[in-house]
Length: 513
Figure 1 (cartoon, one colour):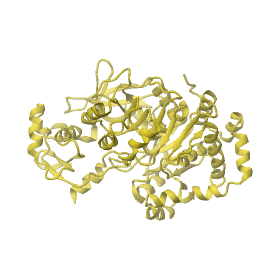
Figure 2: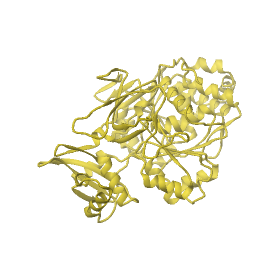
Figure 3: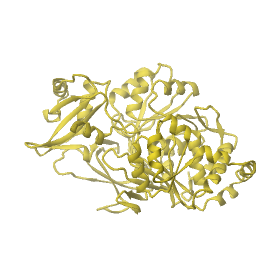
Figure 4: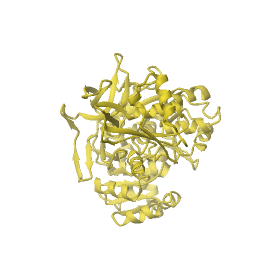
């Protein structure tokens, strides 16, 4: 069990004590693994250098990929009492500037090497007109021998390290941004307590140990990639390999084979991509594959089972909940559901008029965020609250919970179309399409309709896709005609967010054009 009165740094130091300073715990594509001692020293030295250019308690933008440099930056800011705001580099200059304004960021840490490789020069030029840019390469050059030696000394003593940061467990630990799949991204403020509670909820359900090797290709600006893919393994003694892009479908399976990965994190889109390109033996060493962020399709689950003999454990969460709310586990696995809610989470279900299947989920618990930062009220924390009272968070998801507590997601409340007074789930339309065409992406969009209120259009990557095929499948499945989209449009590529979710805002714009 873990104490509730810790900060992230306390937890990292506790892990070092348990597993030993020489225990190798982090690695990236440069293949130079770091022990706890090396990671903590590196983070402290970098953090103290960055502290010279920043203020106490400042929230600082971090625009970096999944590498050890990013991990050291994250922990360096934590050790010196700053908070990282993890910026999504896939949203373009406009999205990044919007995030900086929302969280009132004055400075952003990035790397020249990354900006060049990711072709973000133009976006950064625009961004640099609004905020001060700190390059890791410049910071590293300024670190002298004395700073390194004093860092080496201080980092060996927990008591000296704790003096660097005046953070309390209920203080801000990190700012993340919602995916913006339904509009302007909001800032989400998570405390040390939020994140560590969620990690404790996970660890109480699933056995992780010092002989595990996790492969995390998810971006660290993504709550799943950050909490489950970085903080949890590093504070549980699990060695984690950071890979900078989840989209390298051919390379990620090879890396998994190479490092003998036992744990893999992914989303439906990414896991489908890996399965398509992987050799049957690439994932031989995996014992856990965790899927989150979007609905896991049964075809993908079956493909992993048949090709690799690996079970995918589907979970469910939100940035606002640090992020995990529910999850299947080896002891409690019910395919088609997202598992049971985590310990310590209270929930209420709310009826939606016109909807027979599913109710709206509201939750309260120790992992629920401190609050939102909104673009039209920058820097002001809005704590979670619903009609049930303070501390409750409305997930906006329509769910069913069975007698044994397993949660099934019907869809987002916003992802329903009202056709002639009847509520139709756009997610279920996409599921229907993926049964007919399992090898492509599909996005269901609702648009206004003079006669029936709304109608559904399906965008698909399948060339010359015919509505008839969907009608036939619906008939086979015993699904009503109302669930078949009115029109089907072929499109070269369905737009995705950096998290692997479909970008419905961009998809709707494509439709209008």
